[in-house]
Length: 413
Image: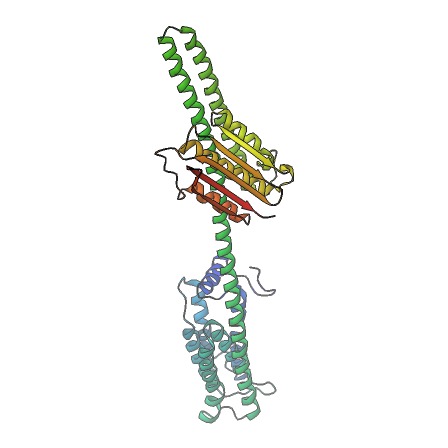
């Protein structure tokens, strides 16, 4: 924080120590405010000593007593309790008050010093402690030098002293409310920043999960196809058709090449996605997928060997980018789940973006398959659709005597 004009700047470590300790006690304030109050308290005590012609007397130690708690506060890591400040200030003030005022023409500055002390104690503790401090300060500034010691016989000065101390208590309480409000605001901002960072990490994790799950599913389909082709070729060759093995080898190599291409493309997509999400501005040489990429996604999975039928209603180019990305990721995850849990089973995809957006993915549940809704993929889809203001439903349904796994996402526009 910037210091106040005219106030000497302490070392950075001292400033941080003062502010951090105050913040741990729910008080947010720049270092120079408390420092200025203590310096004003000490300066007023020095003027009060001068009014008593005691600057060169042992009573000068009273000012050292007043300043001692703040010096300790600035150089130790532990919090110095406010009652220590109050006790030291009252002791020093009582020492000064025991001396008669010899200078005339100015009101006694001792109540001014005590007013700063009361303001400081009230700001650091509470209104109740501040009231106790104010009563004690009035006793030291008015009762002690007047009726008890007879060193001050100015009734007008006594009234002014009482008002000064009370004003210090009021200012201290007002400042305390401001510091606590600022501390609460800072805490709220810190929590909001933590929530935003967590949401960003979750968003990146969802994107990477979708990319990896989809690419692995498509790769597995290609590899499984290559394996089956080779097995069929070996079987045909064993039955007296040697040319079938050469054809099977060629088809397997093509399938493996497709799998390699999918893997390379997935790695590029992951690097691109992480880069775009890290910048957070959505700018870059390449854009994230949107609704216009849905047909290409279906074609890619179909080429890998998963039988997919797709029907699209509406203009995909008119879908907002954020919504289009959400639909793309939901379809990507749904097709990956279908390839993983029901390989070879037909998949029907319905996309309707005429009024809002509706995506429906249906595949048969094969015997022995145990798809569920507790995986991170389904949770990620639901969170993504909820973030767009829509709803997602996923689960088994019996349609026409056949058990199917249905994923439905709806977002109103």
